Image 1: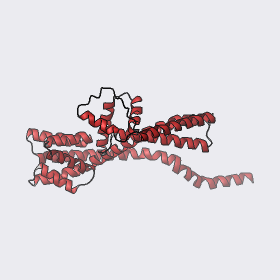
Image 2: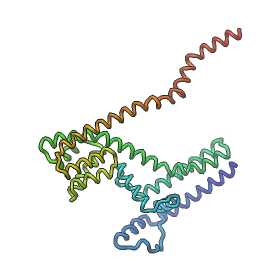
Image 3: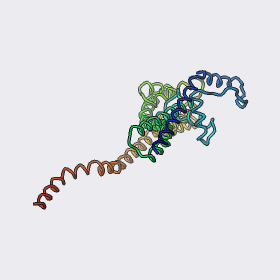
Length: 300
């Protein structure tokens, strides 16, 4: 069985090496040129004589084989995740290439463990299947964690932004000017999103559209409530200052509720480290001397 695993692993490594060599031999910018042609009226449904052999194209093809969604749906979903995670320059093709490289790296690492370790045949074959799948899904896991961390930071910073807006709006400054002053005082992902919304507003969009697009990019409960309040205030003609003050109170209550929820989860999360890490060490320190004394007394 180890011989079968070794042969299978060498075959997969050879396939990966051949794929990389063919990708490096292809023109580097051909894929970008093909995409640019589509902008000028090229019919994408027509058959292409030359296949895309770049690393990104090969990885994207492999991703399409194992996905039930169309290529356009996958790319739109990935772009939305990239924007929400703050990775504005990332592309679906580069992400697919990263997945392929991670899969090959995990496979090579597992083969090294099999060759230099003492693993059984069943575990070796199982690892040859699981390792590339884990490497393929690792970039998606990291992207989801980055997205979740950034959204949490945006929701935590939103009450501070609204407080600054309330002060500046009630001082007689317009809402757009208040946003500009607030972004000068704040840093982080929320300030970046507000600056991007202000740039869109400078390019011709209305303030409501810019705020609504900001809520669509971040897609957090706080930014959705913020955008909804601003749009309703401008539509109904209600005072922006009073709306922002009420929204700030609501967001503080939600943040307090989230903090209380995390505090209630803490004892459950501490239970497993206590049982498996702290209690055994305490039992050894406290009970071992008594056990040794009792054993000596019984033996004598």
